[in-house]
Image (tube, rainbow, N blue to C red; front, side):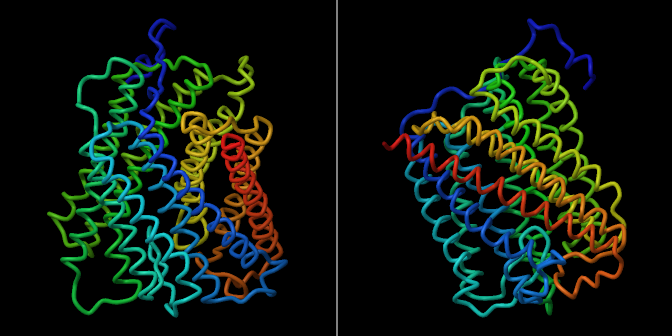
Length: 462
C-alpha cells in the first residue's frame, strides 16, 4: 500500500460512520455499556491502590507483596479484558442485524455474572495471585469460576455476532467498511477461543502456577490483541468522520488495513500446528505476528486520520471531545509502540510499552462512547469535561509510562511494589515518583470520564 493511495483528492475522501441502529439493538448495546462502565469503576478504585503501592511517598503505608499483586490481577482483568469485551459487545451489536438477539442478551448476562465473581473474589476467596501475561489470575475457585463464566459469555457474544454479521461484499462507503472491519474482528476472536482450548488440551503434565497459566493464555492472549487493534482502527476512522472531516482513504483501502491485522492473526493456529505451545519457536512466531499485524496497519490509518483532522481546523463545539480523544489515542499508542523498541530484559519498560498501547486503545473507545451516547438514547456529554477527561487521562498516562520507562533504564523490576522495588538512587526514586503522580492524574481523567457518561445517562432519563 503506497502513501499515494492515501493522498487522494478531496472528491475521493470518505465518511466513516455506522448507520443508526435498530432500537432493539441500542437497548442491548446499553447493557454492554453498563458492564464496561462498572468494570472501569472497579478498576479505577483498585488503580489508586496500585499507584500508591509503587509511589515512594506512600509505598510504606500500604501492605506489599500479595496485597499489591491481588489488586493488580483484578485491576488488569477489569480494565482490559472486561472493558474491551464490553466495548466489543457494543460495536458488534450495533454493526450487526437483529438475528439471535436473545443470544446477545444471554451473553451479556453470563459475562456480567462472571465479572461479578471476579470482582468479589479478593474479598471472599483465599487464592494467591499468578502474574501471567495477558490474563493474570487468582488461584481461587471463586475467581477461576468467574473467569470461566465470563469466557463463556464472551464465546456466546462471538457466536451471536457471527450469526448477525452483515452479508460480506466489497464496501462501497465508509459505513460498510467499518462493518467489514468489525466482522473481520471476529476472526481473531475465533482464533483466540481455539488457542485457549488448544493450549489447555495439549498442556504438558506436571505444570502449575505461573508456568501453567503462561502457556494457557499466551496464544489466545496474542489473538486478543488483534481484536483490540481492529477496534481502535475502527474508532479512529469513525471519530475522524464524527469530527466533520472527510478521511482521505477509500473504503476498500481501509478494509485492506483491517484485513492485514486479521491475516497476521492466522499465524497463531499455524504456530500450534508446527510446535507445542511451550516451545520457544511457537512463542517467537506469535510475537513476530503480533508486531507485524499490530504495527503495519496503524501507520496508513493514523496518517489518513491526522491529514483529515489537522490541528487548527475549525471544528464544531460538540466534536471537541471526540478530537481530544482521537489525538490522545494516537499519541499514547505511538508512545507505547516506540518504547517497545527500547525493551531489553524484564523491567518496567515492559509495562510502560503495553500501558501506552492499551491506553491508546482505551482512549479511542472512550471517545467513541462519547459519540455513541445520543445514539443509545442518552444525553450529550458535557463538552468541557469530556474534552478535559481525555487530555487529563492522556497526560497522566504519558507521565506514568514515562516514569516507568525512565526507571526501566535503571533495571527496576516489573510486577513488584514497596520495598521489593529496591529503589537505590535518587534518579530511580524521582522516576517512580513521576510514575506515581502521572498515575494519579490519569485516575482523575478516568474518573471524570465515568462521571461525564453517568451524567449524560442521568440527563436523558430525566
